[in-house]
View 1 (cartoon, rainbow, N blue to C red):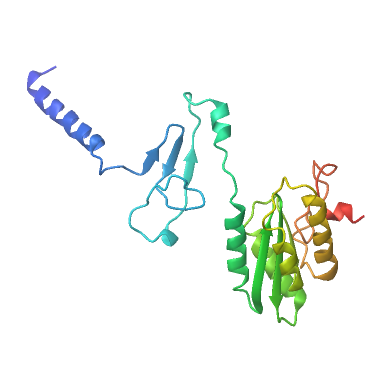
View 2 (view 1 turned 180 degrees about the horizontal axis):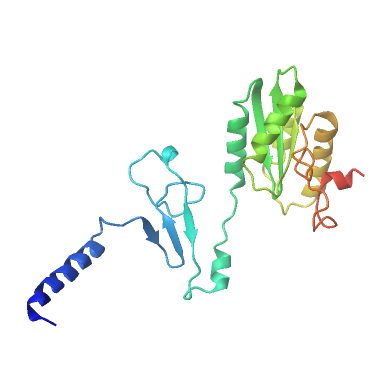
Length: 220
């Protein structure tokens, strides 16, 4: 190698190293071992509170990338499986639904795989309003959730009684089944979602059909 180029080469390496060590130059990603996260401030998914510049958080896109790491075992990865914050989901649904036309009051209960929404409305078209409320809820939760709605304002107090219970509470499922049946039998549920799912998002001919908790099967 020509010796006169060595100093310039070393200077280039030092400059590059300085950029990498500069604490103010974090780049696009922040790494935490097995995860590459785009800097994001979403409270629902960004548990570490990584900031995304000084922009309004409502303007930011959301993007997260996960990679397996040879250092971290699969057991540790499973321990980090994200959990759904049901109260936040219920808050989102109620906040969106109360903005619908002719809807004045909304209460939402989110269980491990069901959403119960009770609302007060002065709509002349109960079916259309039920369809809007239901689809609002379905747009928020994971696709395996079933959604049941009621325009009977008295149901608000009934589902509120379950707000301090959890999925492990004794007889919670059986008691909620009675509430759901009342919602289905006394209030419109809107349109079927598609050819494979009924009004409440319960599927037909699913692989776990014999094991699922669909109300359509229990009402047979």
